[in-house]
Image: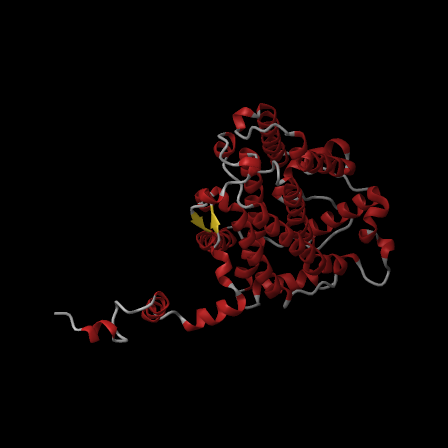
Length: 380
């Protein structure tokens, strides 16, 4: 016979309410008090939102890898700034000091320089993936435009202005090209003109641009980029879009079977791998410091990521740099607005596929031409 007292006793499981069961379960799990305290105040749990399963594949993580590379650039850049002197009379010597005397100077500098190259490469691969999957189509056209602006800034901040700060012969020639382009831009290039100010020389002004103004603009664009990704969600695959699984370019909630926290862990993991690769490349291929600038000479070529633009300078002089860059980035910017078909599979967008292949082959061929060609004089 069942004891009625045992049924009504406070500890009886039969008499326990759902709220009490949940409280007992939470006690048995013994949650991390520190994490719970932080989550209550910061809201880390908001990152547990659902994403499609394909978001956690490598190709859909390239944007996150690029962001992690930018974080590495910021951290190593702060360290390098403690030893760098932007005064033209001592800038090159301060870089030599970083390379030879500063604690881990050669390692940190190698990581910083090669991460700048790798970030541009991962950003380009990210854009190629977006073109292949037509992820720039409705409703993500404006986010594509922001992405193109980010790529342009990475090229300018990470490669071009960074090269000038070394202040050797290549740096001086790069700055001289910049000054020539300023004359073509007129008022738009006023900041880079000698007439802008006579109290500060060009190198310190480019240093401020490199470490302050451009990173701030880059951060603002990244915030806009991330906001739009969160607003529109991870883009569907081309197959999902063409099969009608993603009306108006958005997957329904029941198709979101993964979590963003997994995506975040992959980003961090790939970011660490990127850091390791940059360190290895910096050790195997250390960045040389060229001779002291000689204004009477022009004996260098641009960094290899700009090789594709050098033949246009050979053919059309300094204006060739401006016109070719404007043509390429202008076309990339308007791509979502000319590729207006509802189809997303690449084989269904033959015009874009052909144009994209022509651009890739052209960049490759022009880069090889630059690598094999002798240095030419273009500066007046």
